[in-house]
Image (cartoon, rainbow, N blue to C red):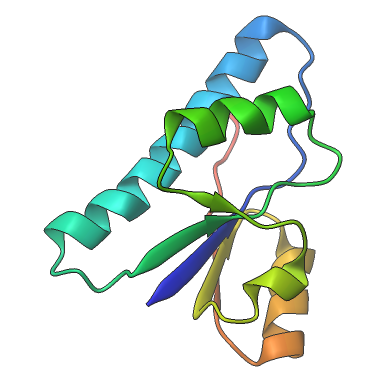
Length: 111
């Protein structure tokens, strides 16, 4: 199985919020990678589709900390993926309609 993780726009208002969001995305990607290693190897590859409005420095931190994750530039690069994981419903809908494949909405509520 091939997955693509596509988080919504990450705004770096200040260093604290940027670090928390960056750590959150890294944690999600690490969980997907661990599911591959510890879960019987059902996940072959995990791709990362950064939001184009997210600062490049944010995406660089994620990709530098997880060298086994490949980045793609657009949704068309996710054509070969089996499932999209996102917190952005419009992207999930576009993936569903364009490729006729499932999406998983991974949402967090604010306290």
